[in-house]
Length: 199
Image 1 (spheres, one colour):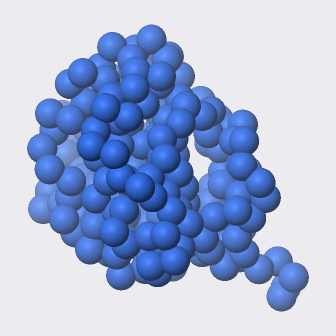
Image 2: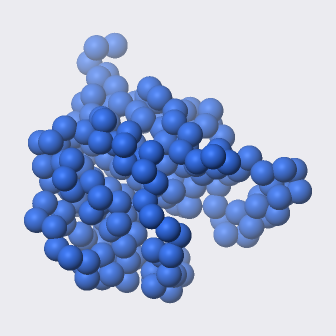
């Protein structure tokens, strides 16, 4: 991923409107007050701030220094910490978090398997992995142009089924799929880290 590109878009990153209320509701329903949450690809920290009251502690990370700089300029929240991190080389201990969240990040990372290896490492057994992924349901012509753009940007155009297969390689099992938008272009995948000792 191009750090300079994401640093440049950081000033306009929050212009997309408010945080999706259905996303917050579903995360709230699956998080406990004492849970520790890691967000990978937190951007300017808007979602982390929303979730602060539902968790014990949140580590919100992004690989763009400018994104994190803007996140740190927000009104401080006691249980939220922002840091610059490479999602494929996290600095946290094994099984440190009760839950991991990533929103619209997986389709843009160069190597999703490296990132999910780290998710598996830092997530507690039977902990939650929440992944919001884009679904491209436009008509054929729009989908063609989207596919061309994705190819130029070296982004990935995966289906929910393909995400399920990729996740399963890392013992992250999809338990629920929730469509977050009216035009069905955004899906929340609620996963649990499999306890491999029970196999």
